[in-house]
Image (cartoon, rainbow, N blue to C red; front, side, top):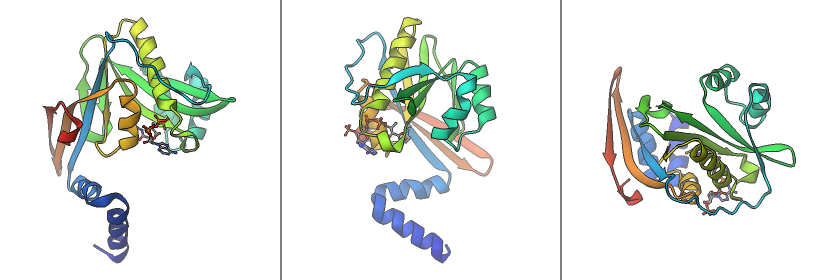
Length: 209
Ligand SMILES: CC(C)(COP(=O)(O)OP(=O)(O)OC[C@H]1O[C@@H](n2cnc3c(N)ncnc32)[C@H](O)[C@@H]1OP(=O)(O)O)[C@@H](O)C(=O)NCCC(=O)NCCS
């Protein structure tokens, strides 16, 4: 490890603690894992408290440019192709400005981080890429978007919603818990060169990270 890598590693260790540091290290070595969370839509939707009066609308192809002002690292061609393949993205807007977004997909979910295609049972949707503009975090925007997505999906006949989150993404776990999502599985991948293997283990408690 060269000097700058050593100092970056040391900074990560100090900033995020030994546990997060360890998982970043094993990530580099080919081991990754994610929590799978689920939420039955046969249960009543949660009451969520969003501190900003946001307006919500679906992302349309003509809105891709504006979406990228909030998330510049996204690829416009990929966004358009996702919309064409019937993936949908709900936007949150406050005073005309985009402040949050969340995607929903059906049939099967490509989990890029694990290089894994998760087949979805019927009447099940996968929520992903929750994002709130950093200036507006902590005000309940992501839970408000989740709630509205769940409401719209339930109206279409969906009975179950799932999503995946890094176990150390505490902000996401807190946000998703406000909508009644609970951790149900731990998905793991190990990769050595071109060889890879996936495991999904049922868990009932977040403490089983
Ligand atoms: C995860 C994320 C979508 C949550 O959005 P949000 O609109 O801030 O959600 P909430 O308002 O419910 O806040 C959730 C938690 O974020 C943390 N938080 C609070 N203020 C915050 C701030 N200013 N900055 C960052 N995190 C904050 C708190 O832990 C909060 O939980 P609490 O309300 O129980 O204290 C947002 O943090 C985000 O965009 N993160 C980067 C992308 C990401 O990780 N997406 C999730 C993929 S699964």
